[in-house]
Length: 271
Ligand code: ATP
Image (tube, rainbow, N blue to C red):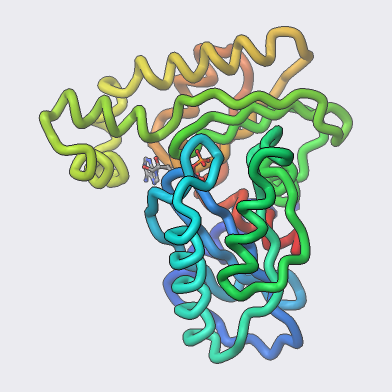
């Protein structure tokens, strides 16, 4: 199987267990904790690295990659952990977490304390693009992670990260545009934007923000030999975003079936 088929399979399996967890006869569970600007995701794998459970909650505990509501973050991770433990009928002990590239010195302590404060034994903290690449397995190209608050661009050459950048444009801006255009509250716009049946109608409204992201990508890849872009992050679930990015950058652009779960799964794989 190609790497991408492997990625899609893993994500599909994960989506199924988010709906219906599998009680596995495993000796150990590995949990990935992804503390995002828009969403906190927990992914659980068994000893064979097969997804067995997952849970997520939209939350406002992180901004621009920094934990801004420490107590709130611990509470959410703890609640999601307990919810999964009840479904799996076990205690989840080990967890890994991820931080945006370049925030190690600033914030990795807070992320570590959130995961441990929620009752996990922390086994690893890695940066988000490295986590995503555990699932994507790319040797060369750019991983573009369009999340809630930011767009992260990571360039890989021969499997090594050679450039990272983070820009504060993400899904929140998409929701603000929808809110303004449709005279909805931000919350209503968030919900409206996430419904795939609205994507066809929304794409022309959101095109300028997508094009802005494409120009940010262009700015960062121009000094490197990038032939392929790999999209991850919840905002890339927007139907058609990949075509606009491909057209504006002139670079072949790939998108897995559910780009939102790539990083959380990579974190659990690194546990
Ligand atoms: P960041 O990476 O900036 O810290 P995050 O990790 O919370 O943020 P993700 O979980 O990757 O980000 O993505 C969350 C974003 O994805 C939100 O802005 C959300 O509105 C958007 N999103 C989620 N599902 C969809 C969907 N089906 N269609 C469009 N956007 C979506």
